[in-house]
Length: 299
Image 1 (cartoon, one colour):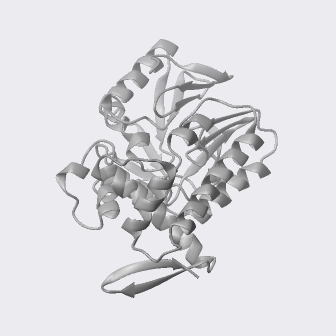
Image 2 (cartoon, rainbow, N blue to C red):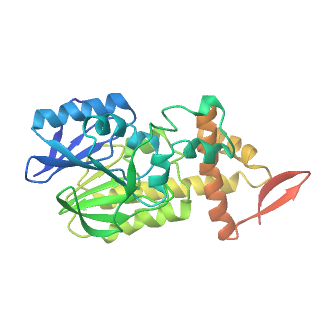
Image 3 (tube, rainbow, N blue to C red):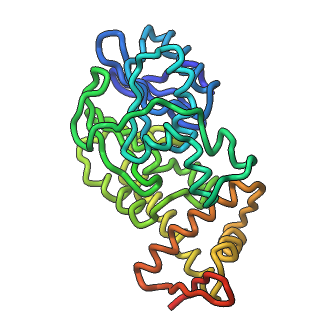
């Protein structure tokens, strides 16, 4: 990962890596950080990049509560104890109580293997961010856009002609590497992505994972096709009634994916579960209990 910011537009910089992190200048030597990466190492690199630019962090905005987007918070909060951390409603609760993420994925107190930095970061002193719309955080005027679906609630950030889509969109290479894009609500995931097409005057769009792009329309189209491809694969896996776990296996086999640890199984199981709910609401599959198994099958 790079150790210094790359300028996107005047006063807007990003630190590329497994997760892209932003620094939005306030014009007075300060900056608002948007997402902080996976872990303390990422947070330290953010601090070094800020130092090189002569910027002091005034606030942190975490777009959502997945650990790879807030894992660097603790290092920054330790150095700047007065810094304010913001996140969307519900998401801020997970930042304060990180055990909630592996807990909801597992459905009970999670085994130790699931209590790792990929599923839970160090606790952060987060508060609820302003409601969607124009606001001022840390001296920076920005527009917060609700883009729920990937997470229970998530914000994208617009500043002038720049859009940080967070994980409402993924870069094309990321879609190829991870064809089962994580989501909590696949219908909302699609609606949020499509809704970004209504924005006018976007010159540069940056996803949480991927390279900057000047073509929002193509990026949205690529993501919508990938999301719908997953829905079709889940439906195809329901041709013969089966449990979620068997449907997950069928979908992974069709995508030629091999899940190698418990975390990847649970994350992708959530993806399948989300698309099953969408298919249930579209009345394309049905749900029933048979032989003590919860099963789904095409209508």
